[in-house]
Length: 579
Image (cartoon, rainbow, N blue to C red; front, side):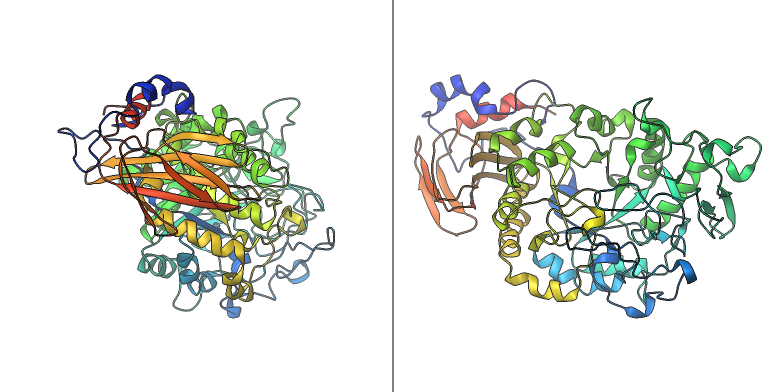
């Protein structure tokens, strides 16, 4: 059986099982014997769901090779080390700081050792070689203010076929990075941009590369020429044909997705040459080892564009996994991208991020806040189990939480449905609460990497991420909630697929005191193993599993073998449908 989208409310036990539990909770079960025709219970068939993702802004992770820093680049508009005025005592920086492929490769064992199976890196394409002179001044709390910034983040693409010179080292290009990732049995996620290039107008003078797009041979095939979008002539000037001429759209007067973002050159999705260029460029990076794409600003291009793009990619690379960034807390809005008719890509789960910030941040609201974001059934997503789940990233303030808050957040992130994504440095609470220009993207560095293992957040993250990595039910299993209230959460993850049959019972306590659990709902008889402590319990038919979870703790009880407990079967049948 595989997941159905329609029907029931997320908290399955409260709605579906009231009668099933009464009739079936004490019915006989056979824990070790599969039924004649074993049912299939799967949250997602997506292979990428096996991997938790560690996200790095490459330039801000580790400078592994100082020879590629380009410290003299840009002249009077230098690109290296451009600190901002401090915000509450911490200065951001909008210049390059030296992170590169060598810094990632040197620390793949560190990333893998925490339990991550994939690394997501920011775009690798060539960016301009000067600081931008247009736009508005960045300051504490500002967004989309780009004056004085550089393309250290990679999102200001000029030549989408060429590797930016700040990233490779001698003998280590993109293919070399991918090979090193793959040698550790990990996946490489490449960040891509479809809707825009570099800043394209409002400059004090027409700066080199800004507003240009270079073709596969390096020639200029498009140029904004430092003109306001409304001054472009796409029909009459071939260099303008790549761009929209709409200009910015005020959210009060129309959809901001119909205009350009900041002063970036806004690509025209209706021009077939745009699709041909981008698809051709990104296929090149797949051929060099990219395993998946994270799609930046996916909502700024229409569904028809992404449908054509994904069809092209998957026609040559079947099953290629992609997830998009639609910065919106409305599940119905972002879910549209997941539908096959619109390209069928996953998305970053912004609604759950919003809830996680409230539950695990300074507000410390109860687990019940997370229940409506799960959309396990009756939800708008093509499949909620394939969503990329996270609590912060480079485009928003980092989560403002105590060490215990980060630990609790990771306990949820690595056991609940979805594919966990953790932003670099969060394993030590790095720059917690800090927005983009106030330290969010500050340099992490080798010294912090080397010291991280002694941090309590890192230690707890490593424990639970390693459990997920070795527990298939936590990766792809159906989620059935038993309790989500206050500081307590209890839920099952169930996977029964071919030779794999496993039930995981997750117990979470984000309170400041130990919490006692006594679980009998849908509990199958047999041998249960505590994944963290290693102890085992024998549970009789109709029995109860009791456990005390320490403050800000987690335990995952695992039972291997087919599902035969009638109440559990009834719950699974209620939320799944036959293939």
